[in-house]
Amino acid sequence: MGFISDTLSRVKPSATIAVTTKARELKAAGRDVIGLGSGEPDFDTPDNIKAAAIDAINRGETKYTAVEGIPELKQAIVDKFKRENGLDYELSQVFAAPGGKPIIYNAMMATLNPGDEVIIPTPYWVSYPDIVLLAGGTPVFAEATIENDFKLTAQALEAAITAKTKWVIFNSPSNPSGAAYGREEMQELTDVLVRHPHVWVLTDDMYEHLVYDDFEFVTPAQIEPKLYDRTLTMNGVSKAYAMTGWRIGYCGGPVELINAMRKVQSQSTSNPASISQWAAVEALNGTQDFIPKNAELFKGRRDLVVAALSQIEGMICPNPQGAFYVYPSIKGLIGKKTPKGVVIDSDATFASELLGETGVAVVPGEAFGLSPNFRVSYATGEDALREACKRIKVFCNSLV
Image (cartoon, rainbow, N blue to C red; front, side, top):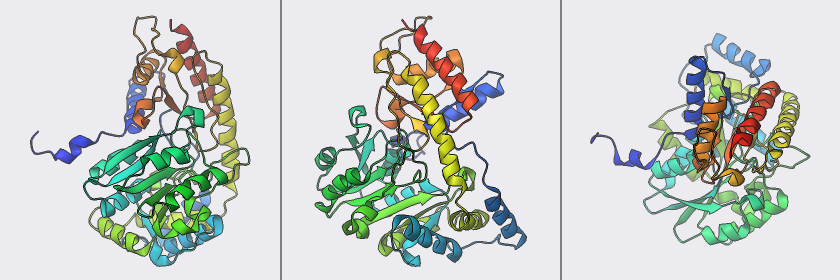
């Protein structure tokens, strides 16, 4: 179709959404499917947050708002960054959008020119490189290997930086690996960035509150104040508050960047939904008591999945420090065949055959830029996780 933009040919649809959609289709057709592809907590949004949204509706808070969010939400964001991260922002330095993804999109659209490079550690969240491509930039991948627990080293970061580097994107805890950077590890990375003043930092802290085993979350500008003036610190209410469908992301950064992002959003989505904004005010300002309780439940699920998958011959399953994903390697299974004679030549084939034979939906590692692996989301009930792990084990043991 000749009238479709050439730019669109550079990107692909979200693999995680594709897997989730396929699982839903199979379920609708009567198949017994366990979907482990969606990065979505199975908990309901807390009642106090829902009540705040209902109150907002009853008050008639149903009109357009300022593009970057209502003052009450912006103040809640300022307070959150100060309270939890030790970061001081003015109201003019914070910004709300309809989800975390639009924050990244707005930032890239507002800053990238052709030839600009964006360093993205692999494995990466599926949308990072495609958003960079849509904005006309060039993704540069820096591999974070399983030997380093899927964490980028200072040496790998240094090697990836060039005169064309405009941004580096951090995601800790990580989607898809659950890897998280401790204070010393983050300091090593920020030390590199201090030496390269032309490089900006976008840190995706969406899984900040989902950390385990006494892990202490840190964010780059908190660790290295010298990076404050060139860091966009991004977060949202989706994961910690079980508000994926409410679509609220937020960030703090330099005024010049925030103003440019406002301009982009004013000509794309405009303001986030007014009712969702009021719900997010309550999420950030209200009780946080349920967050550690939910994190403890996720930790139990993590332990269950890691223990089960680690027993499978040919599979290595690192123990993540945060988020709600594991990212096992199937290097030991590549080259084997299914009972039907299909050769497992890639993680994509593995995921496809696993779904077809067992009804377990996982996302292949190629979607995240590091193979041969697959991602399991343990944001679902323990019974489903036990059954899924059992099916995965039976499938892997059937390979010859």
